[in-house]
Image (tube, rainbow over all chains, first blue to last red; front, side, top):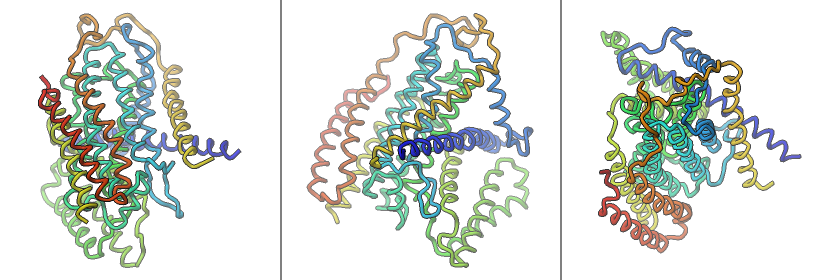
Length: 388
Length: 121
């Protein structure tokens, strides 16, 4: 009987997480991507559907729902049809171990699996099967090249990614995501064993960017050379499922990066005057942009928006500490601030760095990140055992 | 039910629900979208020209080389996980053992590097 209840609970949670990913991850992920891309390129971005274009991706989804599914005659129909589902489900499965915060004395996580980060890296690499299946079964030259590039890239970057995960596991002494966050109560792993925490975080960020196929590592989908890469033959909703899987994966990577190195849902513990200083700085920046000639420049809009948000956040912190509340803000807010900050960073990088060549890409993984990651582990191990 | 089994029950349910929910929009499309599979429409896309031959042909062997090197290091990382959890309790001796293990693998990486398995030519 209790098993039955647990299954019902699991189904409910799965529907909840899937809806969250579809709405926040895919729909608003795409919206923010287009808006931020627009701002960075000095355009306005989507603005006509709904206020500030907020309903744009919903309109797009409705349009995609009405589009015909075309399966090319020479494609391997069965694999071709399963591939988008594999990618979307892999994106969903990542989220089983990601904790969102705490409420009423409980941790908001689907399951705190004891080997959480191993599970995460396994599920994150499941995507490559879907991508390879899509690329191969399309029987299209662009798709095949995209799929193969993606496979070689994802397996190459999986190892530095796992080494960075290991570094965090070493410090926390556990593989559970909740345990890793709890271990950071004294301070973020980013600043532990300086500078090796920073190195591990950089290795993780680089490998994660490559794992989710984003600029500057977006060779599999290189628009200007492979049209759309592995999903070039997909139409309508199947194309949307690839997008969903990809954005779910990107948000999951950002969430894990914030869990491993930025303390997940934990509130940064800084004295009141530091918050006040940060808040005043952000406010001054926002005011300077708003009331100078700079406000005409579309490029500074994301900076203005971010500075204003940061000012509000710091103001709330100062107020909360002044009133003697601990923790000041709900833990879920901190998790989302960190996650969206990293997602913004990924979107920003897209318009900052040019795409790498395939040999440079693989070289970076095998000749730079892998040795750096291994040495990082060894030196940290040495410092924590022998040299202690 | 023990907690470990319950964890994996959740993962299984998530996979099943994920497949159903990902299939749902496809079912909606089946109901809503037009179906008119003209022969021209079902042609493989190749920038507008009639596709030349098949895509299922030979491709660069380099992809396999990287896959082979990957297998070695992926298995190695799995061995590192248990050590990383308990290395503080095990102390210096376990650390030296891990150094030996990693050195053997680094020699392997150096060999692959020297032989040009990591070059894309």
